[in-house]
Image 1: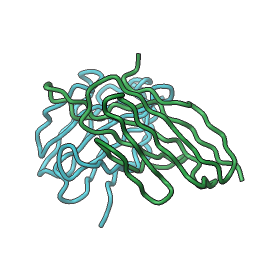
Image 2: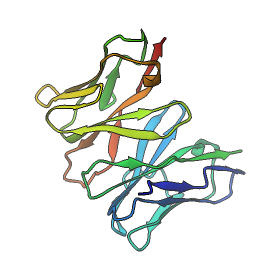
Image 3: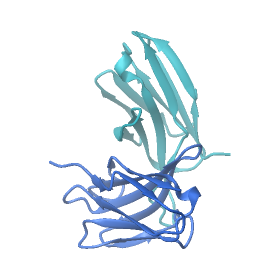
Length: 113
Length: 112
């Protein structure tokens, strides 16, 4: 079956603009995770969804970052008033249930000019 | 101090060599993951383990929970094994932390 997909694959935006990143998890996977990979920072956890609820938002770096998930499937990560330090690859992963093996999407490369 | 430490950071070896990458962590965990990332490519999950040893093809992963240490071994290494190998842990937490905590990765180059 299809893996995790993300769109867009690349996004270039101007500082101060809002961006929306999309993740389509593997069908039937109840758990969904957002991560960020920055140069020099490695991979870091942002937020976790179980179904449509987000019991763990501990990794969101500021209140400019928000995420939602609808229908237990697609998730969007929104970054408001983007800053240059937001430039990174944003990765989505899903798993059948909490604690299971995670399958990663290809990522969205965000560049804030 | 990072919760997940990997060594070495960089490793260059000749084709056919036996490769070992180490991972140490400082928190209680429910599982440890080994991930592979090729240059410009996505992340692939190699192993998820909570005890003992797992083997898949030429790859072997071991974990010692008491010592908070895991190793990833590659036998008969090949240039296509060149990639960044990342260790990640899922912490045991009453606070609901469910995301993975990652090491900084080991950049492996296998020369023909």
